[in-house]
Every structure is written in C-alpha cells, then in structure tokens.
Length: 227
Image (cartoon, rainbow, N blue to C red; front, side, top):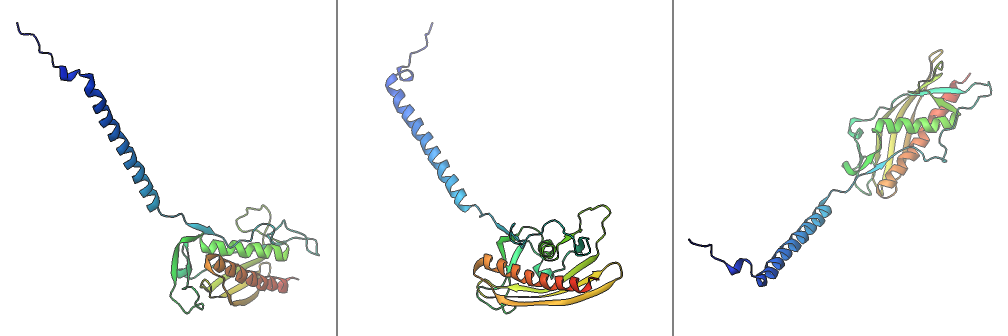
C-alpha cells in the first residue's frame, strides 16, 4: 500500500516569511497606487461655480414692512417680471473682454460665475427691493396677500445691459408705471454708462449701481402718479 509522500517544502517555516513579505509589499503598492489615483482625480475635478445676486445685502436699504403714507394707507405695488435680451438670459454671467468698453467687444459666458436665480428674476427682485425701500411700499407680486390689490403696476424692459471687467458698464432700460384704478401711465428710460471694477465682483457691483439708478427713476414715476 502506497503512503502519501511528505513534501517538506509545503510546511517549511523558513519559506513563510518571504511569502508574507511579498504579500505585504503587494498590498502596500496597491494602497499607494490607489492613493495616487485619488489625488490625481481630485486634482482633475472641475472647480465649483460661484453664484452672484443683484439683491442688496440686509441692512443696506433692503425693503422693510410697508409703512403708511400721509393719507394713512401703505403703497401697494406690483413689480412684473423683467424682460431681458435672449443673449443675456443665461445661468452664467455674460460679459465683454476685460478692460473693454461696453458694447465694443465680443461677449463671453463665464462658466464658473452664475446668477443665483434666472436673470429676469434677479432683475425683478432687485428692482422690487429698492422700490419698496424708496417708496415705503409693499410688492404684492406672488405674495398671495388676501384682500390686497396693487395700486401701481411696474414693468421694465432691459434693452441693453453690458459690462466688461475693468472696463465700462452700460444699460438702457425702458420702464412703465400704470396706476391701476384709472389706467394712468408714467413711462421713461433709464440710461447708464459707468466704470466697472475688475473681476466678476466689479461687474456685479456696476450692475447693482445701474439698478439703483433705474429704481430711483421708476420711483419718481410712481410719485408723479400719486393723487
């Protein structure tokens, strides 16, 4: 009867440390390769976009609760959505080449600089905020205020709104104020041409200044229609 042969190589303890060392080295190499790959992918990841708004920060003239006029009633207004040219109606900011005059350069979209809301909403909200503060008024648009009807409806049409970082910013905004009880109108144009600071922050600051001027003009139209 043949007995199984004993192979000393399979149980030789002197061979185990070498095998273990090889396994450990392979594990370490895999770990280092995985770490290097993770670092490479992190370096290649796209940077996160930055979001901008045209609204004023709290404490800088933001709208408060409606106050009474000399006649004892608050001013109720409705600021309609603002129309903008299709070329500007993008999630990204659209600007001219750095340092150029407005309207005199090719436009470019900034993929990493985006509006916090669609631009028509940004413009509407920013105008509403400034008008409420200037007129001690309350904007009823989408507020769902029961039993309240606006007295003045305000519409704005942005014909042009251009800026270049470190260059110039310009705008042409047509606006109309309608007194709803009798349909009487006041209308006008707001024009602007002013320097824009460097970078995206400079463009946004210039746009805020443009809107502040337009809101002052529109507020004057509302005051002209007051009884």
